Image 1 (cartoon, rainbow, N blue to C red):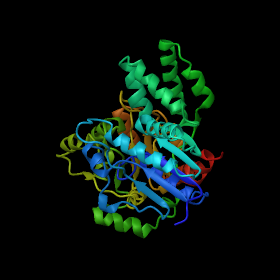
Image 2: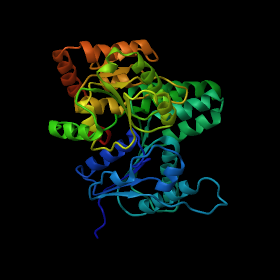
Image 3: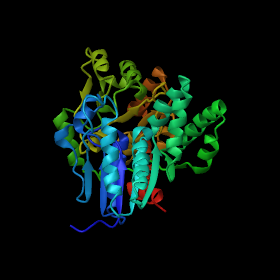
Image 4: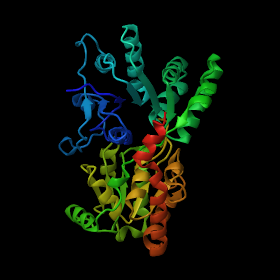
Length: 416
């Protein structure tokens, strides 16, 4: 086999993790094959490790295949039980050093600063120290939980040393990007707090260097959906077109699922439409218990990537009443943009974090945490909105979301 001429390595929590950024990695990898990269690798975690972490995962037997030329690598841990932590990081870092030792021009993209940017930085440092002289360009992309879960928790707990390490790791990359303008602003604000405590200059560096790269979406998977395919998929689930409200996301408090369950009990339209909760997550068992007396609420925990656009297209309304929580703020809202591309009933959401960047002026907006307002908004969409207004929202939402197509996002991110 001939040696590749250009390589892209993406360090990320890849499939089967249910996460928008897993989809981001897949979409960037697929586009890379059409942009001159002839060796594309996703460097990620062994599946048993993902399972033991308790992350929400897709059904393993229904994962979409990657195109030829994309290799998913899951290095095993290095060391035995006497190394209680860091074993898998050593496996990831060591494998990347092996790739960098080859004389192939390589771009390394990390998604989630903790720990993937650390993996790339350590591997590049080791490869250079060993004398391999890697031809490598590094890009670190800060996603939502990097700020809301890691940096912010460090600042709340007064752990400025840990926040300093994270920002130093981020800025050590050749390019630094954020998943949304909101995320960029949050990074700068966090850096200002660290600077105020330690006399550092992180904020100025972030203002100067951090750019925005929105999540790449495979628009083709959501456009031109066949009505017969929608009807067939719904029939298998016992659903009817336009006869259900859809929540399709991670089932977690910050996604507003508790508010939606309570609001559904107050809706006038509940006699006409079911509520479909599609997804898994930490709040699933509790939410199921809340809804056990309501046979109008349907839970789907095995929706795959093929079925997702069909459910989105067939709903009367898509509701994602996401709300800010200490450990999570919606920093973009990939599912919102996917829903806009898929068509179907209007989107009902909140202006939390970066959701406004995901939907523009094409969604019905409610105040985060306003349960009565949420019930009223869904009732208005389902019972009162005219067909013409629904069609107008659908058309404008799709046109707006096309800017997030993976080809355009890839070209902007890799323009250099």
